[in-house]
Image (cartoon, rainbow, N blue to C red; front, side, top):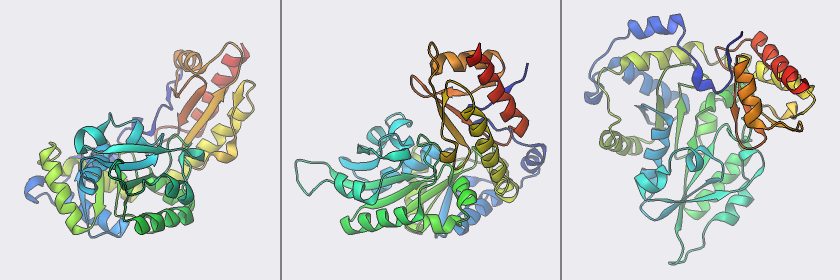
Length: 344
């Protein structure tokens, strides 16, 4: 029986070469600024994103939550897409950690337009929360891994500047957007006051993310990193994996995108599956189960029993994610398993 894990790109495992980089990493006390590998990673990410500074953190969620706490004061409002990670999958972190309220915008493919943002911003009124921060998730996860158009992001940035709001990019899959669009990471990050990239998804590292911004912003980020238990010691062993990923695993994201498109095309030919392959921009493949007697939960359970693992996101919606440990043959096998199950 095959074991094909399409649940998430977080399921990637360090390659043998990455493990060697981990084992050979030069290390020191990260909190004291003495870990040369962590320092090199922070400098690399700051240069990559075109910012003054960056800080290595254990997770992307911590990047988001620290950014929110710096940009907002208790009672301020965070605006994002209603299904964005920061609103839906961080355990209520904005309200608990920063005392910030949240406001979700509807929009196609997990994205919103500048006009939709303009309509969502609160007018000055002491009875209302004060709009303070806008968060854009690049790529849009629940929107199907779609890449936000750069022109739309620039228009959104113009709206935030006009209203005196801060703009933050959740860059969990930013490098997927870079590879899919051909637009450099620094160009994507330029309109934002803060941004970050993740190493533990498509880039295949076991842990970590880097938050980037101005020197003053990162100074405050270090304070919250310490307060929330994110400071580390000889963290070069994991920073080395991130550096290896930046050196070796960025361009190969195109393979994941090609596999995702192929998988979507195979699924589109399955009776009982609804999917538009033209909407697959990167490595996320969402589809609906439309076969009578079947739903997302039943299909994922049956497929797992046949060695193909993927997720359900609602009564009919499923998600498959291609990554470093998924081959083209795996994609063909996964589609064939779905075809066989729904044809039974």
